[in-house]
Amino acid sequence: EVQGHLDKARSQTRGPDAYLELIAGETALAQGKLPIAEKAFAAALAAGGGARAQWGLARVVIEAKGDEKAQLDAVTETLKSSPLHVEGRIAEARIQWARGDEQRALANLRIALGLEPTEEDQRLWPAKSALATGYGVLGYVHETRGRLHQARAAYDQALAADAYRVEA
Image 1 (cartoon, rainbow, N blue to C red):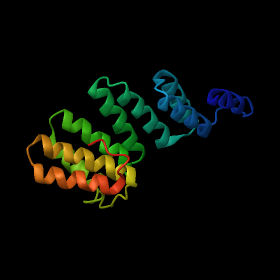
Image 2: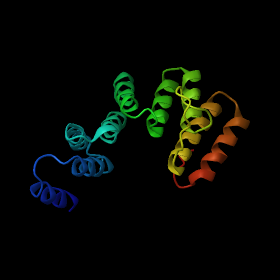
Image 3: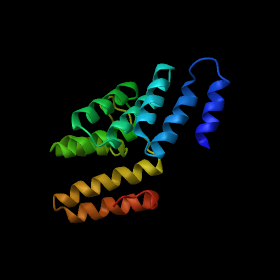
């Protein structure tokens, strides 16, 4: 049904519409249709969708669970478009952690969670869902390193931010 609405909206627009393609990409991504999502986000980017479209492309690469370098490259492109992108910082931290770079991962998480300023001395203000995700990742990092008190505190922060969005 959604696809029918999108097709109808496309037929009523003159040329590519970034917003429409972003909706198409989000819909396809939610349905696990990664090739369709990738095509829609690429069209959104070409139509001026900016960092939102780039983040969509990055999430497609991440969801495909492919090459870490491709994931990091896609996230890096998002952060070039929007250096204050909280979810991009969290994704970058996850990749850094997976690559064994704990210090950079923790630094990125502290920035993403608004605990420390960015390199440009700006503070991020994450949404509740991003706080839950970020603190969940932080808890996981501490837990796997045996820092159980810090892990518990991070998990508690994640639950306090948004109990329905916590992976922990």
